[in-house]
Structures are given as C-alpha cells and as structure tokens.
Image (tube, rainbow, N blue to C red; front, side, top):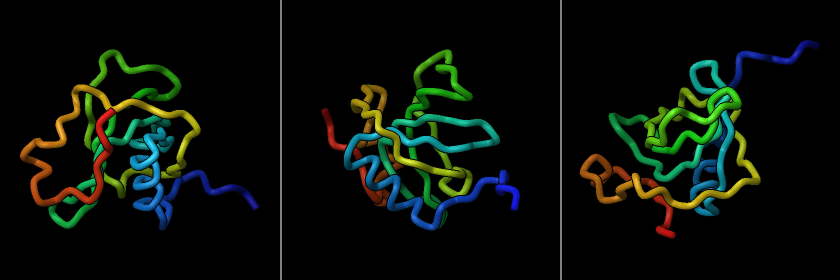
Amino acid sequence: MPADTTGTVPSNANALLLQAIALRRCVTAVYNRMHVKLAPHILFTKHDDVFVDAVTLLRDGQPPREIKLGTFKLAGLKDIAVDEDGFKTDAIFNPHDIKYEGVTLFVVEPN
C-alpha cells in the first residue's frame, strides 16, 4: 500500500507544540508544501483557530534570508514532529505584544 504523501495534521498537534515550546525544542513540519524547521515561541488562538508564532530556521533545507517571527496556522502544519535540536528564545519575539493579549495558550520561557 503506498504511503500517503498529502500530509496530515496529527491529532496531537497541540500537544506536540506544547511539548516543543516547554522544552525549547525545534519542530519539523510541512507548510505550504515546503519542509520547514521551526523554533516555536508561542501558541495562541485567533478567530477560534490555533496559531503558532515561530522562527523559521530551515525552509526546504535552506536557512531563510532573514530571521523573522512567522505566524503559522496549526491546521496548515502537516507532519509535525518534535526535533532533537533545541533553540534559544529569539530577541525578535515579544511575548507582551498586544496580539497575544487574552489569547495565549502557551509561551516559551525567556532564556
């Protein structure tokens, strides 16, 4: 039986991201058909959907041109896995940003 290559959002995606944030571990996933490695900093809700703000470390095996915090809709992250690599909280992340007010599910601890 051939493997399903469409990618799926694991039923425990929230738990995987909570674990990664708590342990400061990177995650790998497929987002918009690209393989990404992310350093997740915060899990939050917006309009009843769950999102993660993360620093993209690799996109299809290559580092991005610039380091920035991206917002990823959890429903769009496929094949999520917690990676062995750790990360440090990036200075570009502001946990007190107004967009997180009252909607934060879990946030990374400062370094």
